[in-house]
Amino acid sequence: MKPLAKAFAAAGFAVELPLLPGHGTHVSDMNATSWQDWSEVIDKAYVDLASRCDRVVVAGLSMGGALTAWLASRHPEILGIIVVNPLIDPTAPLWAALTAAGEAADGEYLPEVGSDIALPGVVESAYDAVPIAPLRSLNEALAGLVQALPQITSPALVFVSPQDHVVDPASSQLLVARSSGEATLVELPNSYHVATLDYESDLINERSAAWATELCRQNRQTAG
Image (cartoon, rainbow, N blue to C red; front, side, top):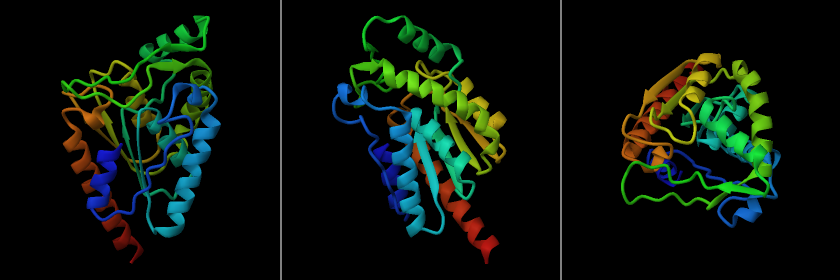
C-alpha cells in the first residue's frame, strides 16, 4: 500500500497507513490475531484522522478492502472509499476453496497465497503460510459484512483484476451491486491480485488521487 499512500501524500493529503496486528513480523504473530484486532486498529486510525481532517477518504487492498467497506458501513460520513480487489464474498469459488482447505487441514497453517503479481520480478512482502484461525475469524466477519453492504452510502472507486487468483472478481461486483452509494468499477486487465504492485499500479495511484481530489472539491462547493 505504500505507493498509493505516497501518491496521496504527493497530492496534498494527510495520510495514515496503519500496520495491522500480526502483520509485518512473523506468521505466528498473525495466528494470534483476529478480525476484531484488525478492525479495532482501523477504526481507531480513522477516528484519529477524522479528528484532524475535515474530509476522509479510505482505501484498502484485498482484506484491507473488506476493512474499508466495513468502516464505511459504520461511518456514513466518510467522503469516499477506494478498494482494490476487495475480499467481500466468502462464498465465491476461489475463497470458498481456501476456506474448505482450512476446515480440512490438520495443522494450523495453509500454504501461502501471496505475491499473485503478473509483473515479472516483483514480490509482495507476504508470509509463507496462511494461519487458519484468523482465516476462520475473517470469514465469519465477511458474512456479516455482506449483510451490511447496503449501509455503505459513500461513493466508491472499485478496481478489479479479472485475472485474480486469490480473490474472485465477484467480490468487487457484489460490493458495487449491494452498496447504496455511487460506485465506479475500473477493470485492471493486465494485473493480478496485488494490483498495487503490478502493471497498472500507476493507473491506480493516479486515478485514486484524482478521484479523491475531485470528491473533496465537490464537497467544499456543497458545504460552501
